[in-house]
Amino acid sequence: MVNSLKIKLVLLCLMVSSSIYSQNSTKTPSIKGNINSAKISTIDSGDSVVFDLSQINLSSSPLEVPVSIISDDTIYALDFSLKYDHNALEYDTILDLTTYLMPLSYYNSNDSTVRFTSSSFQPCDTLTPLALVRFNLLTPTFTNTDLYSLKAYLNGNQCSIKIILPTILSVSENSAQKFNLFPNPANEKAIIEGSEEFQLIVFNQMGFSVFSDSIYSQNNLATLNLEPLKSGMYFVEVKNKKGTSIKKLFVCH
Image 1 (cartoon, rainbow, N blue to C red):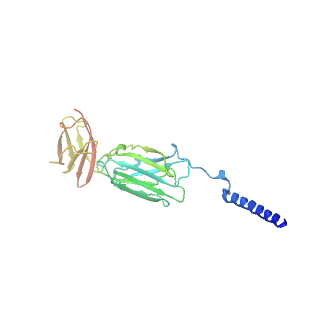
Image 2: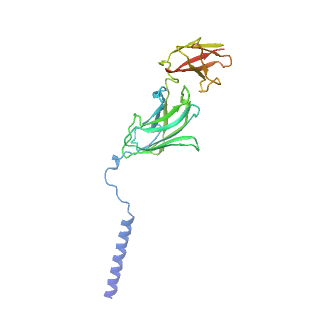
Image 3: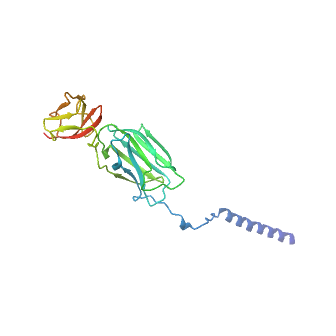
């Protein structure tokens, strides 16, 4: 009788011990520290990747587009992609301006898209350029429509995109190489006068040459027949040994 009672007590102890072990093994570990001290990152429309086209210098090569971020969150990863007009631009590279980003950039010919992805062990700076998207300019003009299908991500979440439009859409007319263009606006003809012999090319606003061949001046003068051209704005590019200069020409029929 006593032995039977001892056996029952041992079995009861084993059952209680097994129950306690089972509860402890499935219990969620506690998180030490103040949970309110950790900021939850929420990427929304207030978080943006900025492409600052106003900082483009069309006189330099390659052309560079600064990229920065605006966010009230702590950002450890910046990613973006874009497409571009191949008639106006030629992709060069993306330059990392930081010392902490681990970036990867490439052009995918399958979908004609430039991609940039990065990560960091320290927070990214805000309101300051983090990278430069570099292109070779194939035309005398650049507009915001030359870049399109832009997408951006912060910390792996899609965010809004802000584009600061350029204030100057064409090469500066204050070039060291001077020439006279008259009349301007013009109707049937326009005359270009230089200090020495020059080569002349006229582009439309899409960056295409409107004459099949370049025009070479005689006696430092060249006359353009504007009758085949539609009314609108064009760009006259003059080249000689001293350099290149571009002016706007307005054709009004």
